[in-house]
Length: 319
Ligand code: NAD
Ligand code: UDP
Ligand code: UDP
Image (cartoon, rainbow, N blue to C red; front, side, top):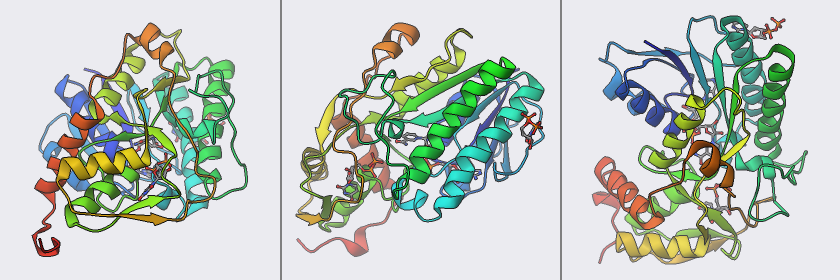
């Protein structure tokens, strides 16, 4: 039986990954400090004999015995990663060093959850893995972007220096059930606002673009990368290459929820990337992967999830 460590396993993506690993018969050690994730995301796995939850901060060393490591620990929403930026950099950098040290001792395969944010505000569009990016090193997003870039550097240095079996996935904006309602990311914000009948907060002119991947598609890509031949290290883009403006997203959410919410324009945060879309040629060719879930379908699932888990009745705007 394969023993798998998932750091950040009680978060949005991590909990879905734990589900898939358990379903295929792996033994899962989920490590999380519950900074942005929570036990609620993995409560349904608690009684499973192949699942173990451990409270631990990856900026401290971790001595466990596993065959594979998925390193997902890191707050992902700008609101949360900017709340304590020094801790964000520590999580990415010290966390990577500790998990790479663990992988080195165990000769374990290790995957890093990197991000499209390594491309910054990109001047190449769509983004290919060869592009080195356009990142402000001293801005409010830098703790996340540069922390993730340094983690990639560490992964490739451990690969060159210690011949570690590494896998680096560059994840583009992903959404779905188990995003936190107060997470601050655009999909959860818009859905919660629409369901509450509150104004939808559109930052800037709303013409900036993102490409949204449904969580099930993303996890499939991540597993395929981890299971791929040792020669495939990445970095490899995994995301949905269909691009939307935030204005289009707001309109779609309003249509799907049947909400009466209006649009409220808010200032654009500093260094907000203007456009983002993955080139997924490598994922197609090397992993045989491409996304299957269209945004409208994935949004319906996500809206259903928020409707089920949150009680909006008290706050619904009068009709
Ligand atoms: P999330 O915030 O829901 O999950 C992150 C998890 O890491 C949380 O459970 C949190 O408590 C935990 N964590 C944070 N700091 C930790 C620490 N020091 N020690 C242990 N655990 C810690 O975010 P997510 O969307 O599930 O993202 C998971 C990973 O994927 C992150 O590394 C993120 O950077 C990456 N990623 C996500 C997206 C996306 O769109 N969801 C895009 C690009 C990259
Ligand atoms: N480490 C860990 N678990 C292990 C082995 C190492 O957390 O099972 C951490 C330890 O804190 C160490 C870091 O990983 O500082 C890097 O390990 P490495 O062996 O690369 O370097 P060194 O031990 O020489 O600092
Ligand atoms: N955004 C928005 N309203 C919100 C939250 C975000 O218009 O309530 C915008 C934000 O400015 C950005 C895009 O939506 O252009 C995606 O933001 P998110 O924080 O989800 O992800 P990231 O910027 O990290 O890609």
